[in-house]
Length: 265
Figure 1 (tube, helix red, strand yellow):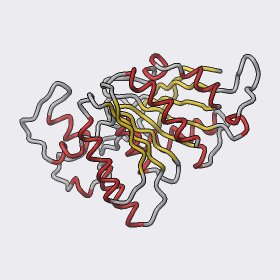
Figure 2 (figure 1 turned 180 degrees about the horizontal axis):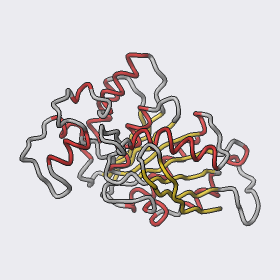
Figure 3 (figure 1 turned 135 degrees about the vertical axis):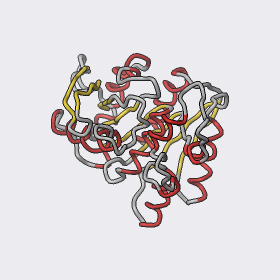
Figure 4 (figure 1 turned 120 degrees about the horizontal axis):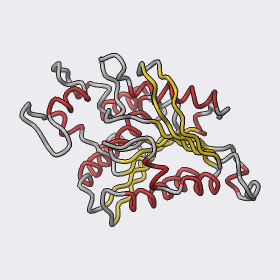
């Protein structure tokens, strides 16, 4: 296993950005004799949640062990509190950064496979939303999506009142982040994952395989159930797990492993 804490300059974001990488190319005891090492290495891009950063996954999940066990490379970019969306303002195109520039950079720098079937994206909370949105927006890049306790708040965003304020953020933040301040039709916005699903289905495009998980005590369980129902209505296959759990790494650790094993099958 090899771990990198790196800083690069992003042209998309017009500034230096940080990321963490965990690679399985340095097994101290040699290459394990398992089925995972008899297939190409998979590359998984993991997105952090709101108020998090690029080191969250590594700090809370044994990624080194998982990388060595499953023959996987993990890459964790910093998405700030952007919901991994593109914004009109210069330096705020996070969807393009994660789904295009960061992919290209890591593939060239670490000599990764450029094949869709070897490239996955996952995330938790805001990062779960980002994984779904980015995976759909760049459906030719990613073959699988692992969305854990996803902050699927597009339903809330559609009906925001200018007086809205909660413990996370206020109306101005959500309106600016999701691009609804100018009175756009959010039902027809690329910042809305439901719109992307309908668009791809209408085009007959190949969607990534989707794994969703959310704990029954998680405050986001209802929007996750609603999005699962939306996918069912649009005849988009999805594997959905729900069981005891709240919005924390106890749940996400277990479900990252479950999601990886689902992906490898």
